[in-house]
Image 1: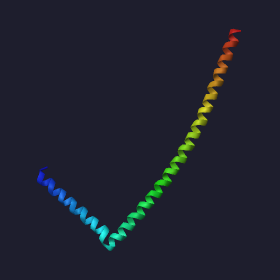
Image 2: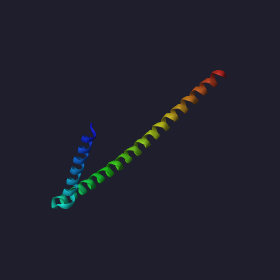
Image 3: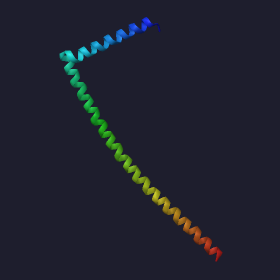
Image 4: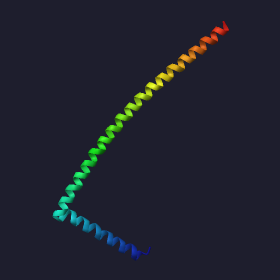
Amino acid sequence: MKNRDKILLGILGAAAAGVAIGLLFYTEEGKKTRKKIKNTTSDWADSLGSLLESGKENLSDLSHKAKEKFKKAKNRAQDAYSGVTDEYENKLS
């Protein structure tokens, strides 16, 4: 892309941004649009907060379940070890 094309593209982008800013801040419709944007952003933030809280609870439940399964597996391993040790000692006796 030539420098001239880049400059022209930059000017057009800046003009479009200027028009958008002008519509948002200096017109009655802009006030309505800003209010809609604010409300939508607030709704999204609330939804995200709820989603994060739900995820936190699910992660906590999952962690608790994993700990319980680990304890059960550990107890089974200890029981199996004790059984093998007892069996080995009986054979030696």
